[in-house]
Image (cartoon, rainbow, N blue to C red; front, side, top):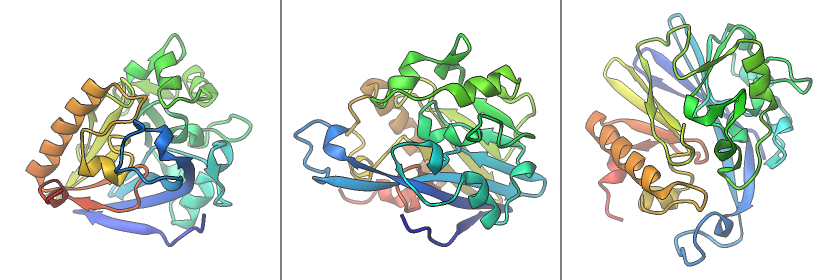
Length: 263
């Protein structure tokens, strides 16, 4: 993957910086029912987006993938720490790492190759529904059809750096976590608001454009009932806020109008 320029947008007084940390190359016919005509045939290349939020007294990372530690990702040649520094963001200044759910490409960057914390000053936040008995739940590990390596999160938990549910250091009021189960039981989206502007980071609520066009299209590993209900709830909130949104595996920012456009 060719690393492009840093992409930033403003949400009021907040700056959202998109970090594209590699890309997944996979045949989407393995993700959806065989008769899904909206999904292209052959290999598709999907980015892995993480999002950094900065503002007065704020330095927060949403999801943390490291291309060198995720076996299914094409290399960018840079670790997440290097990507942050290239964007002018000091990893040691990050106070919170919000992990949207327990899939490996969303958390493998929290640890170095020697399994040491990358963000030593940060609280790491994961929904308790994806955690149990000191490790990821079996459902969270296997929900995308592949077993995640839970050791980075186990390390954080053992060192007292993993917060389950809410952070022991409260998030700024501009940042809210919203339960949106379906991809995993603990899957959450993040709402950012400042000065009347709103941005949602949807993580894996939608993986590809075809799901945005048809919210009834769900991957094989998902809980269809929960995911459909979560999509209905979040789409209504985006429309009500007239907000923009970004997904983990789609490069484009979308506006609320995409949900009212003819399909």
